[in-house]
Length: 445
Image (cartoon, rainbow, N blue to C red; front, side, top):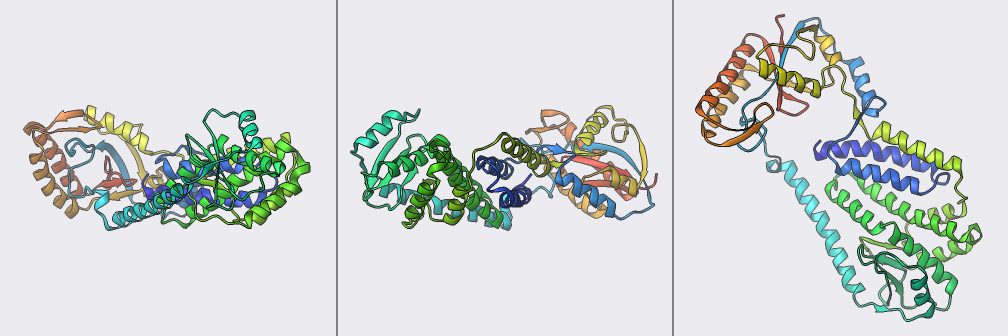
């Protein structure tokens, strides 16, 4: 999958999570939404997914097949074979249709936007860290006792600064809890709530989560839904911490904790990326959520697990290959090239008309025209001659060195394909955007 495909599939998942969040925000444990956002991040950053027969995209494919145009022109799939020509040290054909992604104007714009977005967050973070570096250790008996009573695997510092107005936490490997210098250090109850909240951020590695969120945002900066995801995911990080604090101290502190939040949110810190802080964004949502919090029940946990699994199965998967799939084509191509026997897909020659072919495949196939293939072949002959003596790889032979004999053999195969196209054979140019496999369809049979 390329960036656009990942972004589109991520958008579908984001919309699903936003809807689920709107309907169940005050009914499910807040960690449920963090899990769902983690799934979205994986969808945005990992360029592959798992097919599912229950998936959203499988349903879309079924709907597409219902509305596909039908025709009675008879076709026969005669073979599916791999291209044997390859660029030295690569697994793609040498032809003029080979493209380098970063040379296209759209890719250049995307790369420039990604760099600009990353630079903005890096500069903002460096500026904040410079301000934070002027902070001083807190010399307070309660703070000292708190650190002794709440040891962490990572060394945690509690410091104070006159450049912030609300508490915050930063740092992944050596986290720092930074408190405003003008805090009321005698109000131990408020200090206890604040430190518990900030230590939950540290225990959950929320700074690292924010780093991954920002990375997703930089890569998919052109997608407004990814910006929405970052906003809501940051809110849910705070809501999850609020929930933990209430569960730690009991529901009797909800009103006092909510009032403390309101007073903190009146003091807004500047933009602080990769920092967990008391932000006044969505304060109303946080207060309402705190007041509606209840002890998590077994039913709530089961419902949350069911919801996560359901969203994963439906929206985080791709369509299930049916009939003529990429995997089946590759199996057929290996057998065809090795044995030189014309076969169909998995079961020898399979006769079918256009309607049957379209129902059997979920692949997006682009077919060569005679003139296109002829032009491509003329350039390919030159490329193959220039490749003699160079090492390359393809799915059939693995690694090998181009020889004159190998080049001549490859050209003969391509010339036969050109004759086949002239005689009515349909030969694929790309299959699902890839030119690593070839489908041949004989119109005459």
